[in-house]
Image (cartoon, rainbow, N blue to C red; front, side, top):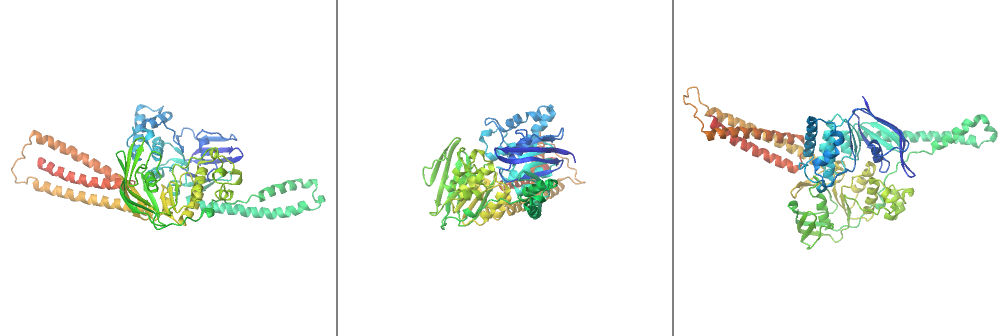
Length: 617
């Protein structure tokens, strides 16, 4: 296999904090690598160095194989708010498209449009400023995939994507022969796409072939071996210490090497690997929860011409754990804001039973009723995070050194300004401010974004034992599978379906439903063809039938020609829908619409075939 990337002796520090030092590794053609490390240890910094947007402190070498196509996906996509989606992608792509002839440029544009459609962004002229965070990420993904690069380098590709988009990207990358290096915290995505896990730990890099479970096992083995070796070194150190403390006559000039070796042993003996983990012990517990949580009756919400809620009625129960899933822009975050009374500055409440919202792009109207329990204490973790004062220190935000230490903010970080923290560290600090309030209703809107896998595992354990009601919007399927009892599926047009079970169970249900619908469609098509064939035989003249076929009028001839065109069009549309149904990527609402359309096509086809037979015989 060709070596696509060789890295030698690169380092990065911020002030006194060393992220990584003199590291090196190699990536070969066909490697699909997930880079794992705790927040704040330099994953994004490494990605920026590879992209040429930052430099190694120690110089070093970064060597890509000549003539391979490389595509970078950064966490934040830089765009012009006034630009349309397609124009924005083409503006970014000038370095890639500049050398293309017209035929290959058209092919690239076709791929861009294809990926935008697959990612549910069919309106390529829509302004970038009108897109949600997840939709902007889908634009970035479409731009990356359209390059058909040999080597993809991606920093948290699933952040802000809805599950449908994640599963599309997952399918594309798992089928592709590309080489890739990506930072991800999505464990299902990692296992479906990657064949190697690379870990940054204590400034060094370790590589493990295999899936995430294999990584955990081999990592534990590595740490155990390291600590066992440390114990051996300590035993040797004790003997050498006795020698060092013996009479000065024992340490002649000839033993100088032994004295130097003693100090090397002393340094090595101090290097026990201890695993630092977030501890939730200090924030366990919640305020006592009454029998009434949130009661919603006939909630409907329209913003402009778009319906986000259509007569939603539900009484939330004590201790239940609900997952909320649906496409970006389906109204999940809006729903959370509404049921918790967390109205933003452009949502002005004027009446308890009918809320009027004045927004920048139109008017919003909410009708129905919401009743909150008297003992309710809501902890709301927003997807957008929190606007910390960048000049505040960690200790200014949470004035509890013991609690901060348990959330992996050691003493030497307490006076760090928030502006110096990594994205994941800011998220962890924000999460701490929510949990320390000890809420009895915990509302989490995309809590997994920017958190490292270690923190996610600890958070999952905490939430499993949480003694209150839990509502989670998340695109992390592993996170949902471990925590929720049932799902609210946002199907679009204000429709919310309640599915009892985990996310994986829901996906299995959808696949079975798709298979059933396809079988029904095939059976119906077979019946129609058989019926059409019988009618054609009965209508055809027999061998003794001397009757001549009547001549069609001009109008009938034109009708016959149009019928043939219509039947071809319907057959093409039917093939496209059947292909989409077989992909397993359609959300529930699109699945239902596709199934309904198949039934319409079959009925239209039968009607037009009958008329075609009448005119043809």
